Image (tube, rainbow, N blue to C red; front, top):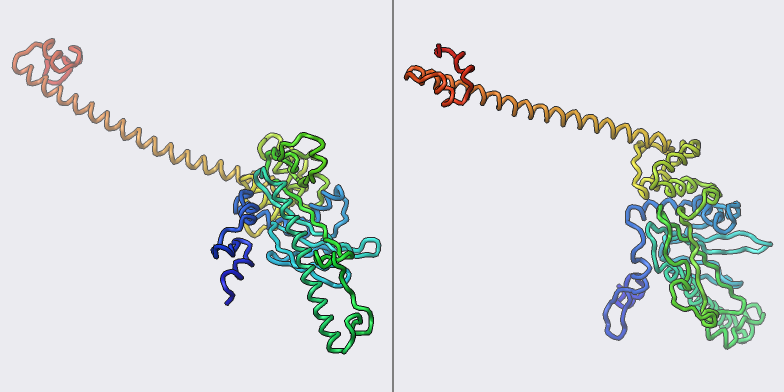
Length: 400
């Protein structure tokens, strides 16, 4: 088994302090995973955005204004821990540590050449006020990893060339086939990054799964208190790419071609019942046959009350809402009926008790009046003692 330092150095959760010999929490991992999105919503939105059709739709909207340029089949899912990317002209590969919610590699022919782009998506249910730094860190780690691992790849290739050359008895300047062996200049040795090497671009889009507007910073400049233009010119700004339904027009949302369009529309109007009802009425066809996973996202994000079977793959959202309302009304009526019955029984019991007590008191009053009458007291005096009107006492048995 590897020793503790080696194991911890490979962990994204901990860093190993070589001076103290202790494991400490990785501050980078702690920063990029702080806050963000609740677990249940996070799980559902990640699974949804991970779908290749939804993922392609996100970047076709953001980069190409809804034009279908990125095809789902041109996207490759990346491993959640370490990925190997095609790199440079000599076949080098670059493993890159992945911290993002969802990341895919885009590979397509452009002008006769293969083009690679790394696309990443960050899901948020709340505003993250350090998002520019967070996404900047993602991309910086991406590029730093590419440079570092490219250097390792080039070194490995040179070592293999040297070994083959020695075995073939060739000179240092000749390759295995007698051709001149590729060499690095001193500057290239310094960085391990060759003149012909190219970084693979990394683009991150943040989606706010909330009906609230994004009121946090959109760039590094907005996080700084620098207003001197001369100083600002020397600072490299970084802007986040944001999709926030509350700040989008319906026309912009309609540029999406997948069920993400309905998800964002519903979220946008979810806090205004009248506007939500009108929006659903205007888009009955699309919401009348919405895929299950999109409805799951809507329900998790907005807490909308909808009733549908687990086996259903296509949901009529309007009907699901109506069914839930109908069921809730029936349950309310049943609860009201049961409560009314309980109250009625309670009132009847109390009323019966009161009547019984009154009858008992009347009986005692009559018995007392009779005894007092036998003792020779006048009707008027008896009425005062028992607390009943004289006219009433006169009508009692034995009082004649």
